[in-house]
Length: 243
Image (cartoon, rainbow, N blue to C red):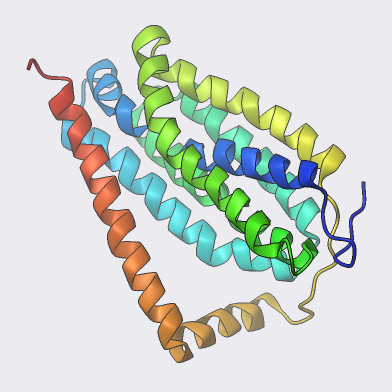
């Protein structure tokens, strides 16, 4: 199914990217309401269990920095399909992990590979007509934000009913469906950067150094995001206690 920017992108593909954005980004947040259950099963301290959430976010930051720019250098559809395979493997490792270090490593990998929504946003912008660009980007971002919010709610319910491992097993199964949907429906885009990976990363650093608006937006986003994650990570342990 091939789309081009002159005719815009179909609404079906935009909705597909919005739904997939929510499902993929949710992988980063399922663990937050499950930390107390993980702590209890592995008999580790709350502090040790909370590092799972921290490492997931560290991995997410590394993925945004090191993987997302590759969308300019390689065919994005192929990059997304490879990344989804890595997400699936990381979630599967999380499902069957028996030791804390395994959970730490799997969480870091889940965060690093669950950055596909940030590859979808430029695809939506590039393939959309000028008239539909804002609404299409907004729809993809809405899917992303809903995934962040609903993942905690769903993760808590699934963890309470079937246990914390079930949530990551279900998430791994969903990634198979996402892979198939991307393979069949996502249009292909040619890369627009011909330099080396080092040159690509240098261009990212140059933007960060020379764009004050980008610096301010990054700072605001980091503070808001960090505050939200700190709240949800610590709140779960209090909610597990008696009223």
